[in-house]
Amino acid sequence: MSRSRWHIQREGDALTMSRRLPVRWDVVAETSLPDAGLLRTAQQVRQDMWRALQDLRGFAPTVEVRREAGRLFVKAGGAVDGAVAKGHAQAIIAEILDCPERRDRWRRFAQHRGASS
Image 1 (tube, rainbow, N blue to C red):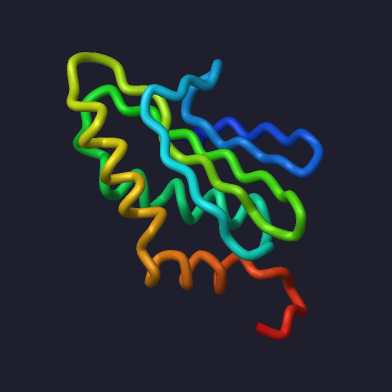
Image 2 (cartoon, rainbow, N blue to C red):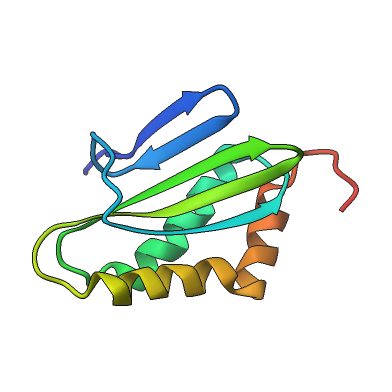
């Protein structure tokens, strides 16, 4: 049985979840979300990104979630080894981050406990 190999780094109001250290951003897309839990948001974004790009050879996902001014700022992407159409991968990540159904699911899953909505 393999153990989790996800690296989680916390620094103030920011959390980075990555497959490899040091973090490398060959492909990246960004969005903002309503305030919620950093780790739970990062886990959900990483999971959806991995599902969409798991066949991308040499892909090592990274998600950074930063709380600022009552919102979460999400940076998703990571490292890609080898020859690949990075623009295509980046477009897929941007599409994931912009999907209303996913965004709603992330919000519900990661909302602060005791929040009214």
